[in-house]
Image (cartoon, rainbow, N blue to C red; front, top):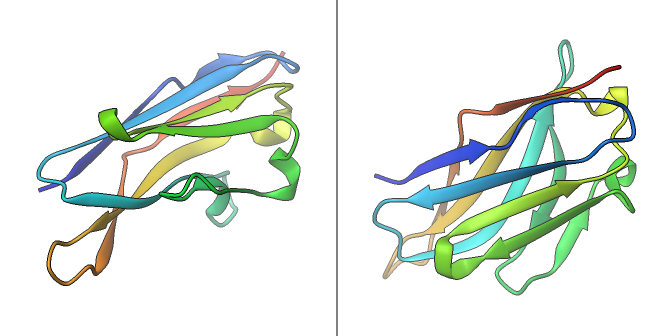
Length: 121
């Protein structure tokens, strides 16, 4: 059983910074893409940033230039550095890990429980 645990959320003033971390544990053969999603009240969950096993990254337009995603494969971790935070970044942030099954090479996705990020003065 693979588990994903996030940390690092909290309350920050506009213009501030936060660092979210996510670590996967359990029996893991390999990990493909690792990503961060967010869901604000009354809105659909959206992709914020993702990083592939080859270290290619993808960001939602609103995060470009402000957020940086990175991964540490040895620790099975992914981090999201968020700078110049805005009130509209307020949401629950979820980590998603694409775990590869051995032999079949199929992947399945594991979600974390979410961590609240609130940007307010």
